[in-house]
Image (cartoon, rainbow, N blue to C red; front, side):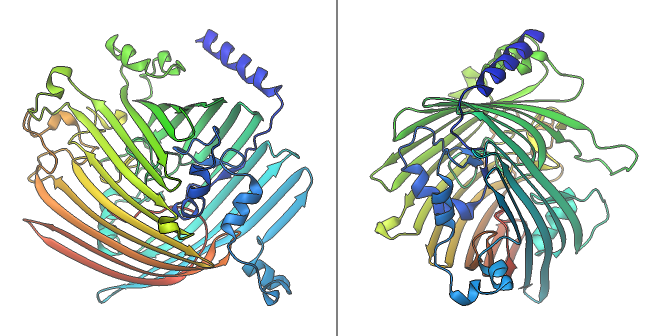
Length: 531
């Protein structure tokens, strides 16, 4: 153990004295931002552009000037910049402080929306505040911190999810067992990023991470609530290697108690990305989850895929391994995919018997950027499939979840999903449409059919004959259309009109939801309600 720490310390110190060119400022994990910068980063030809590792770092994928120009699509009118109030609404951060060696910005981030679900009124009242800064002439150190205070009345299916799981999707845990129809919650986050050399970036934060090129990720997504982490990323030529330690909360089935905090669990993540050439990328992923008291110091081994060997020697953690890849062609298309393997038995894997321990998931997708040579038009199709019991463990302390939400796909397991997304950015308008169909199996009569990853796989329905959709076979159709008009590109302040339709049907019931919303919103965060 001491030897590993000594080697790591020497590497960090050596990197710190290498002349740095890369910056440290992070680009938020945001589907809105991706729709504006994807064409530039995928076809930049830079070997430092590892598109499956998010958040991106400015300087790796884009220089700061190019990034700013992509987010600001039009020139400002004179009346928008003549007055202090006009500049703050349309063109500037609320607070801006700039010196050659230090920059600081602060913004008020509202998200105010009103809507209707049949005869039921809905609303969201969010007041957020974010502070960001970069230090040094070369911007080698950056930080950001944010806080959101919210009151909300959600659609019926989201309300049920919050009451069942005591967590607002991707935002905050409620720690309250009382059933509500309206919710008052707050959450915060932030990250410190330091790039001492062109080869190394170090981050410490309370936020989210994402691995993959798709809308979803079967390896690590931004679906769950924020969590604390420490991350080291090293780059050498076309290779990039990430090692991250994170702490999660295990509260499934527990009642909140102010005197006794919810138990924690820990995760270590390794990801190796290789840009084979300007068109082809491959990635290798590994995760190990363990509960306090079960730590094996071999978890700190920085070599990827070392833990499966450790498990053979009795290591108590639960591991997931995976593979990613993307191929760019014809200056417009990106073919991408993932494979996640949670557990398998070799002799059963190809037997076709539906053995319960063959737990894996697959993703295949295609992006068509600047489709039909129309600037700002991006099209995407994606297929995700995860077998029953994938990401589950014998106990919640080692499964792949945090605060009752999956760290991968929001559906958990036991599902197939196909979705299509179209985004058109033209001047100040962003028009986004999403269509999705999913097939999944729900539990019934207390039998665990493999969708809920918080249930122990020891209580599985059967050893053999397991298939996607087993249990109560359920079909979900989901579509959204959002029209967004940008007011201020600095904080993404704008006006949005949205429509969502959802139909969930099974032999047991059919639920139809239709929602219309209108409001003013800001920030670059992702929030997923498409489940």
